[in-house]
Image (cartoon, rainbow, N blue to C red; front, side, top):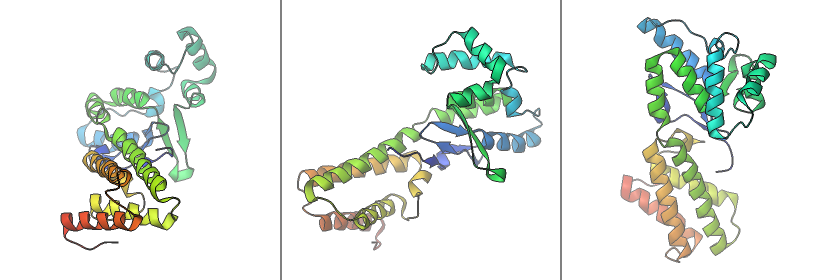
Length: 244
């Protein structure tokens, strides 16, 4: 999967709210986290906290040090801590992270969103509230993003097998193919539906694309029409409905 996508899957819920997640580069939406925290803290009587204060180098220098050692372990930084601290003294931590492409703002006005590296997101969640931290760590350790990437890769695998067997086909054919796969997995179809998929749904999509690629490569499916009919039959067997 070469292009970035923003996941809005139900597997990305935090306290019943969605956290937007860009897969390339791997960034989570801090704006969502702050909004959710504001809603939950009022209900639960938590302390008022602000993301920018947590990432303010002068107010919270310990967080600068924590992030340095995380980035060092990730291999994302190769300078000494004194150099990193001095850079943050001169610029601010957020500016340094932006230069490293680990912190970004997208959109304008009311649509302006802030995204950051998951490690930064986790640190902010911990500083906001321990319960936030616990929930964040749990859903960040799932394999949703990996499944989305693999599903995209297997989509390319299937297309490659089709090309090698039957040559160049029209974009309409691939649209029909992907529409059929979406119906088989989700029982519906709309633009970017795969970005809303659960881990289980994406795993199923990954598997079916791999299986179809095998059938095409080994001549169990002989032509492009048979492939579409195969997906129709699979859907019919699963849902007893007519599609594409």
